[in-house]
Amino acid sequence: MDLEALHAMSLQLRRDVVEMVYRTKDGHPSPSFSVADIITALYFEVMNIDPSNPGKSDRDRFVLSKGHACPVLYAALARRGYFPVDDLYTLRYLHSKLQGHPYAPKTKGLDATTGSLGNGVSIGLGMALAARIQKQANRVYVITGDGELGEGMLWEAAMAASHQKAANLTVFIDNNNYQSGGTVDEISGPYPIEDKWKAFGWHTQSIDG
Ligand SMILES: [Mg+2]
Image 1 (cartoon, rainbow, N blue to C red):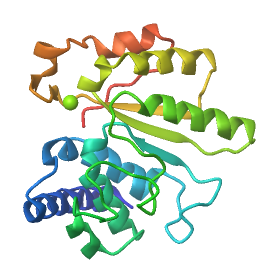
Image 2: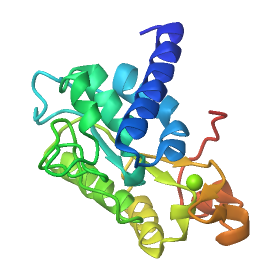
Image 3: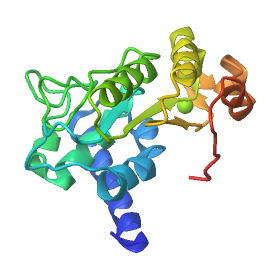
Image 4: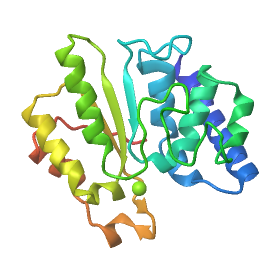
């Protein structure tokens, strides 16, 4: 996709989120909006995936560690062809395949069950090391929240990934400056975020979303 088409898709995904959350009267729209561009880039340009063969072993993997942002991930999966767009309107319904947080056994295209914050980098690191052991060239992408940086396990994973030189693992930190209950600088004080990851041995880049 060219840049214009990617931009149009990111707007479409945001519209899908509004429609889904409006119809269900529940869900998390704003944390979905703040990752819409990253998820659009990953699912429509970057990742090696095949909706007609969702389980192919050499596919790139994606872990939405901030699992409450799943409405936009579900929208991306539907628009990419994993399941019909109309299914989006079953978000959070009892027995729906689109649960309030990502539940991999129920939803085609999901690589990880998430929502309990802080686990995604560890899950992604496991996938990255498994790929290396199996001599597969796929990459693993993880999105965490910025409030989520308050979870200690995430830093254990950051340290372990650096020690293991897991160069096939990419972590996006969605720095929207908000977490449940207020701004991250008021509540959890994660700044300076980039310097902390550098200190843990990571190559870092800041992107103006
Ligand atoms: Mg946040």
